[in-house]
Length: 124
Image (tube, rainbow, N blue to C red; front, side, top):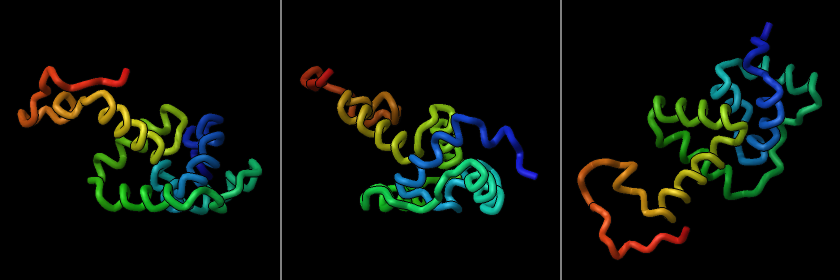
């Protein structure tokens, strides 16, 4: 029996977005810490398709993120995406967008390299 807490209404609403963002059934099941079989049954019972129909760029980004991030970073990203009810790849891209646009590299990386100069122009 699947854990009903993993398949909250917010999670069920987010699954189609995850699929359209390029996530596979295995990716989604991993993020939810459940089996692909349980995911498929729950989705079938709730009329949710696990067939990908999204754009062609998101799957490339999603797959690359999954392969390059540490397990700890990936799990934290998935958890935050679930908390926000959004696809993991969208959270990753939004985070990168805000860090880039607002020139927050030094604040986020906190590695002592590349201190912001007063000449940095922020778009917000």
